[in-house]
Amino acid sequence: MKFVDTKVVFREVPDELALAINISGCPVRCPGCHSDYLAGDIGEALDTSSLSGLVSANPGISCVSFMGGDADPAFIGELADFVHETWPGMKVCWYSGRTLENARPILSKLDFVKVGPYIEECGPLDWETTNQRFYRIEQTKDGPDLEDWTFKFRKKTF
Figure 1: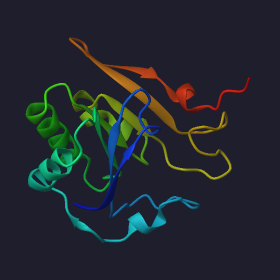
Figure 2: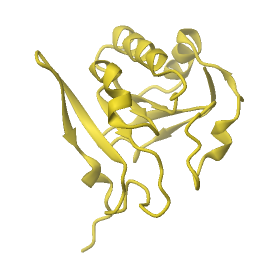
Figure 3: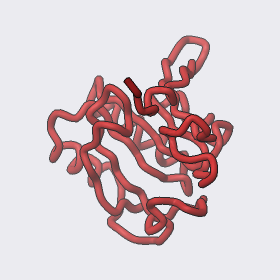
Figure 4: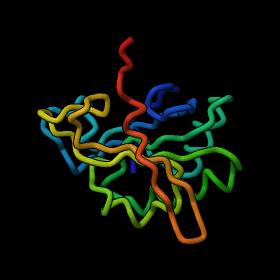
């Protein structure tokens, strides 16, 4: 798995200061994708060593957000475990272009997940018509409990 770049972001994970890591090699290839360059096999290796460097270089973040990684969800789960073990209290988010069912095997390792392919006529997360969903995940004894937070992306009108 490779990453292309990172940014500290405020909007991608509500109520968190997140380090967004843009992962290349996206197999979903949604028509109209705003980051279609991420479909290519480009960037640097993403592993626990490079992830440690990225997190350490961004003090003050409260969440690591993997933007992509659909080619290897199990590895995203391994990286999520690494983040939780290495930085207790740090949250982990995964932005996936796949369905919730495809993400289900690693939900127990995440604090947030965005699922759904980008469908141009449905629009992005901040559109009322979006097909995509953003969930906050609470880990319970019965398994992951998902709360739909998609509404938090909608622009408020006064």
